[in-house]
Length: 408
Image 1 (cartoon, one colour):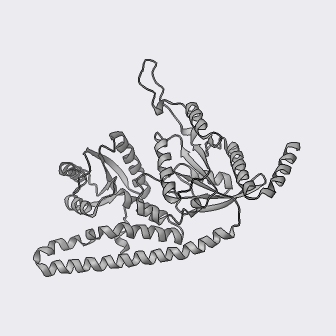
Image 2 (cartoon, rainbow, N blue to C red):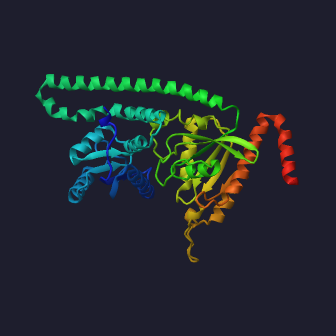
Image 3 (cartoon, rainbow, N blue to C red):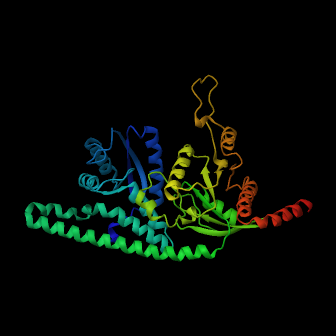
């Protein structure tokens, strides 16, 4: 069954396809396709062309119109492209119709993300979660696996019955596999719950944020560890927990998988166990890429996903990373149009967000180690507040330590 789940797209030339609708502007679709291109590159594919079409809503049969599909087919034949990736999740019917017309490999955003997750998973736990998400994605699309039976169905009722029997058999196999994987995850969950319990009552801090904002780089700085980090989406998939000591104060710091827009519901569901570190955290450190042109939307996506994981609001520190890569567009003096976000300087944004977040906002560069000491002090202060609230009798020890430090 696995051959039907994991796609090999390494070094394949790919076309990316998106639809401009009433709820997705042309500017948004362009940004979504840029992100899809980054996903494709992360998976090993080589994006060569983007196609978009304005529609009231995606075509129920072929996602884009038949004319656009023919245009895509012509380009693929001319340029010898063997892969098409669609920016939204496709139905079984859409996949079947598109494959029939284009005669090439078809992926959607969800299957592409699943492929990357399969590549990135290192531990047995993460691999099991990915496999569960893959089978859940596959179940409603099993008909595409049996498209070779279509030609036989005209032969009469007997042939049609054979195809349906095979399909039902395969569906039961996948459903059984899903049930087994869920039970396997329950067993691992119990083991991990014991591990978390054995860590004692130390304050827990969790790094959260959109994918590729620099969480792992920040984790390495704060914990002096060597967590894998690179400029690719979902570089970190397995949750990493490290003990960090700032001055006299120890706490646990976890780095989790990054979030992304259009993250499939069943994928979030599969990874809820991994995100138990977020659910059980005492403090969230929300890392944001300030250099990204739409960082505000990324903040909203992360906050929405966090609400899906845990309804409880937690104390949060907002860390704007990558100030070294920040740039803005200066308006001409005779330009009387309203100021847009891209016209704001870093100082403008700093004043705005620090006013919003009060003392829970900081601007840093993890790469250049800018303002890292200030971030450590902020974390120390927040963790200390939580620690004293949990262990009031330790307040005296903190006061004595602070006095000794001031007299040193």
